[in-house]
Length: 262
Image 1 (cartoon, rainbow, N blue to C red):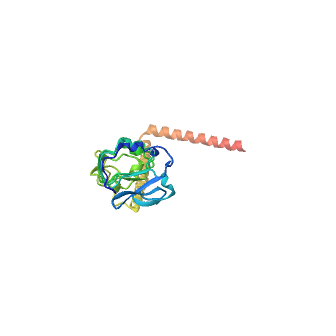
Image 2 (cartoon, rainbow, N blue to C red):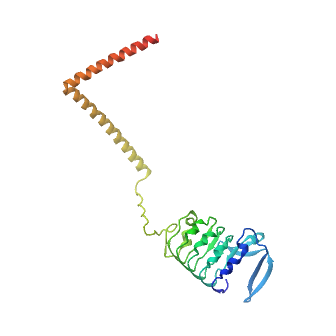
Image 3 (cartoon, helix red, strand yellow):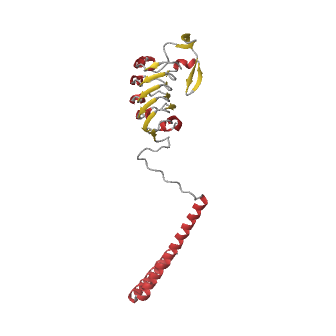
């Protein structure tokens, strides 16, 4: 919340403490504006009020571990320097409410420890880099009110945020937004008017027709067989001869089996 203007310097990548894991080697210098002048309010402070995930919070002993860059609510212009993606241990980056433009650096996904990214209310354009789908620690993202376009990269992480985090980008599409991208298959309309009771009635009706069809088929086949035997004399004699022979064979087998048992 100052009146900083101009572009973001690329030498931010020289902040070596944000390149490696662990705390800062020095304590934090804290400045605040008093009566229009930048005044050193305290050296080596161990507490401060910092906006974190959109809410102002007070940090104490963990302040040394907070590796954050917050240049929000200024008049900065130009693009994000690609060198900033070298800060692989940066936790929070807030560049919201400026006049920045251009595209997000394609290698932003290399900032694997980034938990907070707020680029809202600028004039960024182009695609959202696909490398952002690899930022597994990202739990706060706000890209609203820019000029981003095309499909939101598919990943569990990016689709987990509220659609409001992408609002104000007229040409952005894909989940979690409801706007479909060109080439997406339209969703089939839901079937209306069928309750659970109606589905159960339909299933019962189908089973009834199944049994009716099976019974009719059995009766039809039975009478076809009888008709063949009735009108085909040779076939009728051959069938009954086979039947008598089979009956005698079964009788003999049963008698022998019982005799063996005795």
